[in-house]
Amino acid sequence: MGRFVVAVFVAWVLAVSPVYAADDVVIGAIYPLTGNAAQIGADARAAIDTTLDIVNGTHERLPMLMGGGGGLDRLGGVKLRVVYADHQNDPQKARAEAERLITQDHVVALIGSYTSATAATISQVAERYEVPFLSMDNSSPSLHKRGLKWFFRTSPHDEMFTQAMFDFFAEVGRKTGHPVRSVALFYEDSIFGADSSAVQRRLASEAKITMGADIKYRANSPSLSAEAQRLKAADADVLMPSSYTSDAILLMRSLSELGYKPRAVMAQAAGFQEQAFLTAAGPLAEGVFSRSSFAGDAVASRPAIAPVMALFRTRANKDLNDNTSRQVVAVQILADAINRAESAKPDDIRRALMATNVPGDQTIMPWKGVRFDETGQNQEATPVIQQVVGGVYRTVYPAAVAVQEPTWNIGN
Image 1: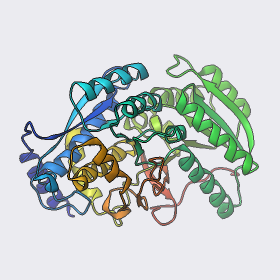
Image 2: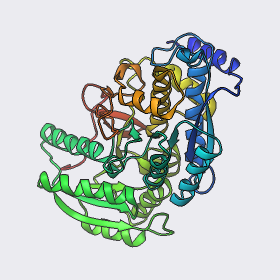
Image 3: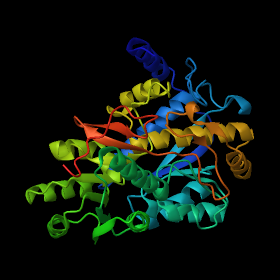
Image 4: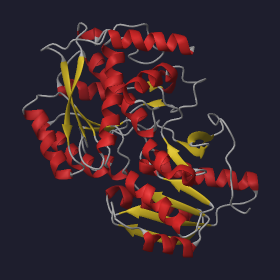
């Protein structure tokens, strides 16, 4: 789709934004809308609203599931509407907001929530009230292992992401003759950090890779100088951080202040995939690797990327990233399930979600597809590895979607 055509399409979609009515299907979105992660919430809202424009608007068909617009056609064209709530990065606030959305706003499903700690409490409320909760961007592996009936996750979890990292290490080591021999783990003191480091620790052991450092730190710390000193002393082949945005920026600056540049950084996405990190870290981010759900440069195999990216850019003044792309796809999948259910009853929506079987090329993601197992986890969410080149992330693995070879400094 050419730039002019995309621009005309965006103008058309935005010009015909739907007017909501009392009989719309209402879902609740819970994100940090205030506080130190407010930008995450603002970006999530832009991603969700972009998808609502696509689902509800009057426009030419996009080459993706639910890309025809016009609302939910199997329910007579009713619109999908989202009510937003602010969890302020507080799991207990997330719990209260989830209950309020269900009991007062009468939402038929919940979506969210960025941090895995908030997803853990939201999903408990959803389970108690028997309302589907679609985890859009939470990556803790433990979330789908609690025997919950109403929990669904479209995106990969950290076991899937970390396996991709170690598969990449093995492949690039074979190609270059410089394998990874040691890693340093750096992770925040939350369910995200604990789960991420646990699977990294296990896979490193299985690959016979030495653990150079294993550092847990307090999230949102005012200083990471002591931790940076320990990472410099360990001098592992690869630093593997699991951090949100402010900590990711502070880590890179703290290492730089010591005059230390790791040979490779492989991030568990999160803050490292945010534009705020790339902007604030600047040249310090160059060469950083990160796992990702999204390959925005895979436009040849995913033709919906260009028009969806253009719509999102109009709302957010930035490109889709690992988090916002997952939010787009989760709303798309939920809208499809509600449409197939031909019902706004939570139990009908749950059954439709369980029957989901969407090929990857009907989304903007490089995944094989979307198909939930009995735990509610999408088993066909296949991650990619990206590297910061010229201030932007470029896909370097796997070969099927890579746009360039990785720059590999280990052994050099």
